[in-house]
Length: 194
Ligand SMILES: [Zn+2]
Image 1: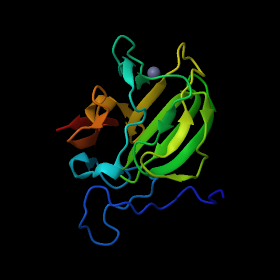
Image 2: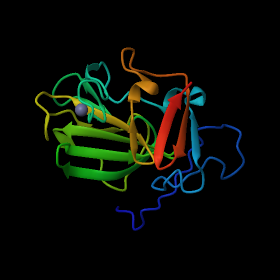
Image 3: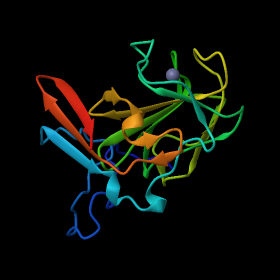
């Protein structure tokens, strides 16, 4: 069933486990900077089921930035048609084909984070669908500008891409024990993890 509104309310309690009702509840498609200049996401409090590595067993074949300054994601690879999984709970805001990306899925998370999964051979999750961490979104492929099967994995906040290594240890395929802080200043967003 398709959602009739883009403002799907997710009620996940990600940054606090003892918040009052409504605490830490963000419209999944809302700009996290709508009412503040600083957004923090405390990944230290995430329990096992609240995150999932997007491509189990993957190795990085091309980092964020690096030799390609316009490279806005981390390229991770296993083999063709492996399952690409949602990193966190959220709502699918785009599922389709896009120039460069090929078949791509966008997921907005209640924390304010957005993740993107590109070059899929097949998209499985549909726009408007609510997903949990670890749900299958797509199958690994090389659509768009990819020359080998892999997942171009992006992490964004307020629309701005940042290096997913800040929150994921891609060597260990694990979430890092960090608190992410994103500060908006003069139209740019500075992202740090500690
Ligand atoms: Zn890439």
